[in-house]
Length: 92
Image (cartoon, rainbow, N blue to C red; front, side):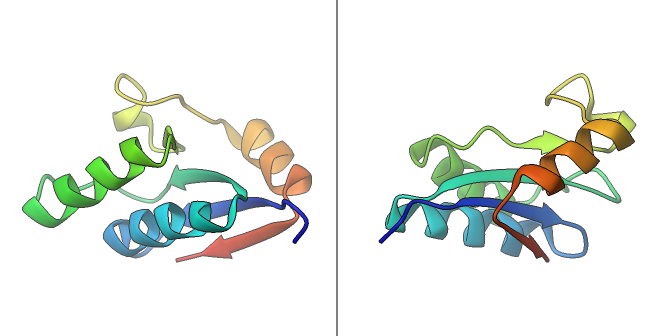
């Protein structure tokens, strides 16, 4: 199987976006995760999924200005470049 570049956009369900992103690494794909819309809620479920991201070597990024102090921030141009560079984009 050819290694693909996959961009996961966490727009509506951050917990599910983290789960999907971590799961896609099982197949050896390069996976990027970008949190959008709102800050990620501090819940036990999100903490558990964040651990999976760590184990999967995925460093989340964000377009949410309020999270820019914690995660790499993507402005509109950087997000557009990430979308253009990906083989697949998944919006969750």
